[in-house]
Length: 271
Length: 263
Image 1 (tube, rainbow over the protein chains, first blue to last red):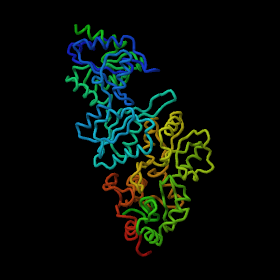
Image 2 (image 1 turned 120 degrees about the horizontal axis):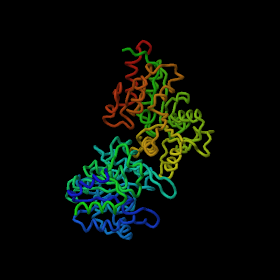
Image 3 (image 1 turned 45 degrees about the vertical axis):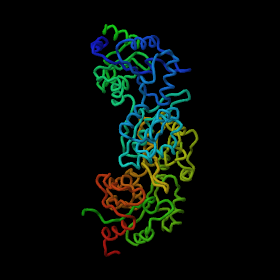
Image 4 (image 1 turned 30 degrees about the vertical axis):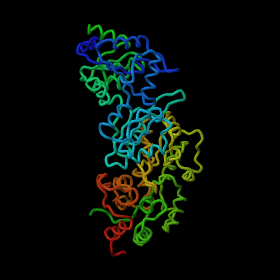
């Protein structure tokens, strides 16, 4: 029944947020392949009266490069519609007048080019991979421990991920290391942090109950969105597993086969 | 006071008796005064980058009167555990500490030992350790100190890296150094005294003082080394006493904790 109930929210809907990897495309060699029907589904959403934004935890590339990849796959989207942790961190830094010390991947550095980094009064870490040396981590530690009130931003909190040559430690491990060293709690920016979803809602100028999140990650996409007051829909593509529909703590407002099916249902119920 | 008479004084090294290659002013004389009192003295340290021989040489060069049997380090405690469990470690310790692991088999590792090893704490090596632990290898931490003091400033200790690996693999490290209870009890073992008859002097509120007091000892925190203002408030119960430095701590012990008739 849950599959039909979620459509009740559709009439009051003003905006839709889409996760990217696993909803729009599957990652793989040569940048990946579009999920069947997704290119067309994005196009139809854009032609509707709904606002549309995209939300990803990618921190090893700038949005420009990431968007260019998706455009090559056939998607119609622009950089200003894509939300990833780095620009969200930049917005927080501006708002709170913070100057960061950065421990991030070289390829994401351009996102921070406009930020004042002199005399840092906070630390931002992302998935820096090979840049996670003792020296670099120690530099970040020294900035934090030298502050009266240490502020640490972490772009995501993942434990590890898989690459062709094996498992690799993710940013969460180094976030935990710095948290322990300095007795601080990091501010996690990116999904599932409510603040991250809120920044997308603010950009659209709508309230949480007027927005719907569609993702393949039950905990980070769906659970995170629900925690921020939005409805959350899970697609049965990407990292979806049947056991997700019996998850002990997170229940999606609805489950749909793929993005195309979700968009069909949304547009039909608004007609 | 229901405490028994003081029988033993445990003293931390780095940050308490010396900071890198400089003695804390007056510390040698203070140690000599302490030795004239009827108490045993033992030196306990989490300084994991140096083997026992090196530590002794440095202390003797700084004119501290210390013998090898009086020194108990977390490296010794780690070695004891490896032998007990009969495992082959990937040793993430500095080359200078390897001497204390001489004779331990390390080929085809099935355990991970983390000490203070800035040269080994790079992304590749930590990934290697991570994959071993994920595959079931036990994680042994020589200690979990957050940071330590170098002449060029504070530097990360092993604790943050151990904590990160624990998070990545959802496991708990076996910690052998301070502030573990077993460490303090091992240090007292050949002195034939109970924790209630001993006192610990150190510059680390949590690892020296908190750890010792949890075993039933008294703790004196000194404001040298890694001490930072307010550290005494970070543990509960607070230190028995907080002193400017090691000589003041010794004076307090001599004046208040030892029967005046015997001095």
